[in-house]
Length: 238
View (cartoon, rainbow, N blue to C red):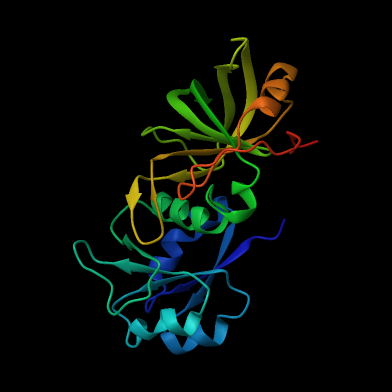
């Protein structure tokens, strides 16, 4: 699968280099630009923009980018100049946090394509990645994976498994998973959401959970609160 293009506007190029590996693990590739003018020339084909706010003319970048979301990379305690930035990220914070934020903007659980397929599911679960055992609460499940609310950290790309009991019958199931993205708790113009891990299915899905999934209610949007059942087969990689 081609990596999603992230236009990284950084005058020195040093900051973009710091994030390169993290973005790569999250399924993105950095397209470097040293100025706003260069960024505009490279904008076509990019799906998200990260821009340092110290650059000349950066306040005009969100409008020029149109529907492409622009994330402001800011100094601690500062706000982006002008308006139109989708959200901001502290440049001194860990790179994984920015990768999680960008992943949610591109693939996150609130995207239209996923919101129609996700099912609401609340269950305590244990996520094992490497030697770490993480406890959290499953929030929702879709055809390709689950979102688990937790404050614990796990490396993006890490392989492991999730164990929990199915609703109604209480059968114990274990499913191989991979950490697709990490979501820090945030209240921004982009989202209001809990901290957690986006886990993708990486192996066979036990029949007890496959059957239980078909009975789960649709994960409704916060604006309507409605629940309706949709048909969407649970799937795992071949």
